[in-house]
Amino acid sequence: MNKATAALRRSSIRLKSSFTSGHSDLNMIISDLKEVKSTAKAFMLAQQTAWRDISKWASKEHNSTISSSLTYFMQLSDLWTDVQSEFLEQVSKFKYQFDMILEGEQRIDKMREHLGACELRESKYKKELKKASQKGTVDDVQEIETKIAEAKSLIKVAQIEITERLNENEATKAVRMKEGLSKLSDGYLDIARKSFIIFQAQKEVCSGLPDRSEVEGRGIQDMQYNGSEQAKQAVYKAIEYINLLKKQSPYSPGAPSAPGPPPGPSSPPPPPYSPSSQVFRNSWQQGYRCDIGFTQIPPPVHYSLPPDRYEQDLAGAVIDRARISN
Image 1 (cartoon, rainbow, N blue to C red):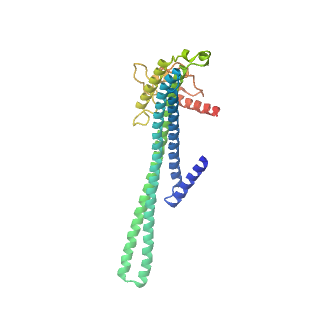
Image 2: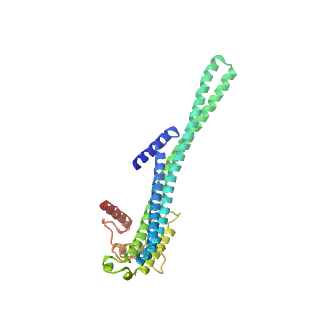
Image 3: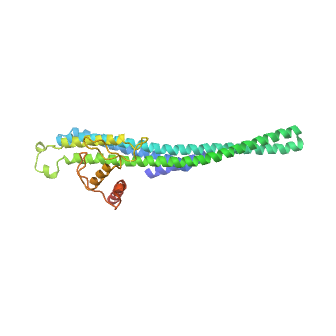
């Protein structure tokens, strides 16, 4: 059903483009990006609904371990929703670049239509001149020749304007593509960093729940949730670090391309790629405990890359793990 709907949508866009201004490829890209945003939003809302239903179920359970921990899970769920909403804004901005590219192409189309109208007018005047030269007066001939000269002048001006606009438009398209893709890449990197923080915190909240060996042979009255303080600290520090990343947002003008590591308790955040940042990355790779309250982080998969390419190294590890899981 989804494939049929997608095929119908794409066919309708191509058909509509053929009847209007054309540019079916650009119209298709814009429609695809709308679909990306709407699908991602549906996924975000489905997750939010699922967590609300889980929370509703937990509130009715006579199990303090579940109900107590769900408070922290819901905070992280809300945080994850905010992060996804920020990413959707970047998808919209990326689509906007193609909207502007299409608008530029349509301006050129109008200029070409104007040029075609001038050429048609010149052709009409030439036909009138031919008739006037046979049957008309000298004044009629002179008047038509003046009109032909004006039409030729308009044609020349229109041709120059089209050439200039074409050159300008091609340069603008390159700039828009660079800006759009760069911001979208920043969006993906940003959501990757923030999702790591959120779900590492979620993992720590989970670690406070009893495992199978701790509950076997015990009744519900003997079960205790001892991870409240640990979960509270994990959630608090996740929120704190994500707020720090928002201040260092890669989308804002003049912001660094990648935020630095989380600061210590009393030290200001170091700038990205500074020596202190590199020390943090090296410690991270070696599996040291992160100073934002998370559990020990295992080292990522390595590809013998230099230390300053740790971001790319981590991205490669994520892709490889995804392939293995599939």
